[in-house]
Length: 278
Image 1 (cartoon, rainbow, N blue to C red):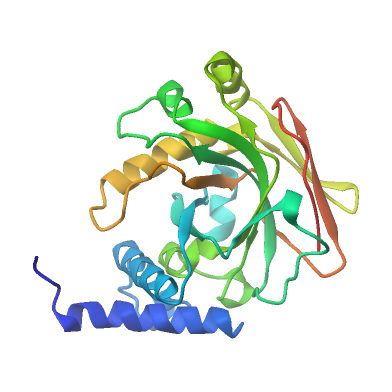
Image 2 (image 1 turned 180 degrees about the horizontal axis):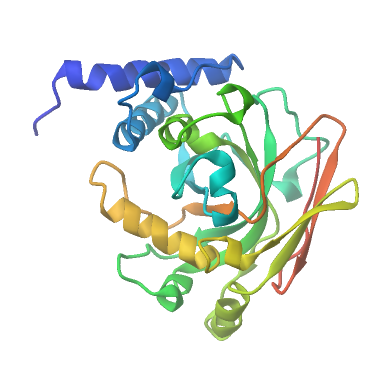
């Protein structure tokens, strides 16, 4: 098997090491696209692969993917025009049922919160599957809060920067999973395209998100998009059985502070609301 020349790999490895160090030290950095105007999405995903290698070398394990910027209503605000993806690790995935006490924000830079729908894969999705076939790949559906962060001051960046910096992923707090059975597939298929979710801070509604915000079709549309993207990228592994996939925020991402409590009110999906204190 041929290997890329060292001079080709080195810039991506260097960027990966710098980003990981900045995250570990909670140290903001300048966007990579400002440091190198030619830095592209292709290069950013090579940095993602290098970061995965570094994190696995220190004992972390990939358990799934996060899809970011699936909410088309916020693209202009964040200077993006398409979704991105990143890895979820065993160190960043938390079960709310097992979580005791407030969640710490100490390890994040400019953290924000996003309400999302999360899928657990019973089968590996394949390119060309429609939403009904994709639904049949699911073991369960759950609500979740993703804590996202920006190493780039003021949340100012371009799409390649976000990809390289973990897809902005900080942590995923998973609510109660509900099984997808053959008997319930028709109900899920309709509901996942029509539900609403309120995200609340201290009991006050901050925003109401809708299924259609996610690529104008709902969370299954986000899963289909990720399957298509991975199929076109030989350097990135396709989705596998057992992976967790969080499908992107249904609202804007909101700054979070110590002492706050956030929760949801979900309408149109058979899911239990979630609550998270910081």
